[in-house]
Length: 308
Ligand code: SF4
Image 1 (cartoon, rainbow, N blue to C red):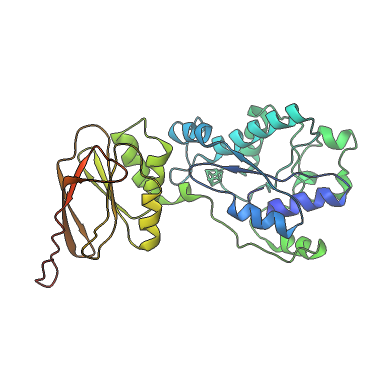
Image 2 (spheres, protein in one colour):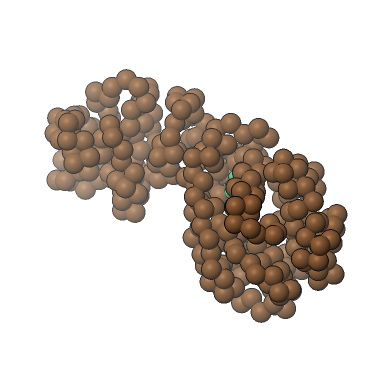
């Protein structure tokens, strides 16, 4: 369950047939289950959350089936979700795995060829049920065994949401989430930041990828400086400090928090420009995050001739 309308409908279509449904959502360094939690509440089901951050990060770094328009490895990502779901199915005795996929809806991961590749490679050929497009696809084992009634499944395809909206009305679903374009990996700007990180540090970790989501990144050789743009980002950066980082938080003048992270080598000093202001930092004082590292904030600000 992604939290989008299609996955809500798929779950409800099955439930209406008398199938006991457990919505399953995946969490990683790049996406959370916030939307899925809302969606599950809206359809009166209890969400199960599975964190597969490390396995997903490996797929983001080396996708076997390539990427979409940005860093998004959608086919491998779907594949990983289904492989993980299959393990759960086998370990816990579920009968069916179903998704909200709709044939022809997305160019990369939901065209007919991709659906076949994903199904086959996940070891789910003939098992995976797509309730919204089932009548356009070959009959699955679940349908043959009578676990799902094919005549009450749907034959939806394409990008229009008209049929889904009509079905939502029929099923009494009042909460209609806005169509999402995918996770942050589909954003071109983030994709470029991640590609630069991968070039400098191919073995980057999840927290390294995450800090690129907040603030503006500046590279100084192999040192990364991320400058927060608002209070929320200051908090997000300070929540993601790891051993060896330097977190600059100006105390006697107003300015952004800056997180500095080394990927080899040592940062001696850095000059950072943000919103037309120039901040100069140099180590000399201890920080709570790094009691062994010295940091001094020189705090020189240049704007309209002022210095502070
Ligand atoms: S948009 Fe993101 S979450 Fe969705 S399949 Fe692609 S990589 Fe995975």
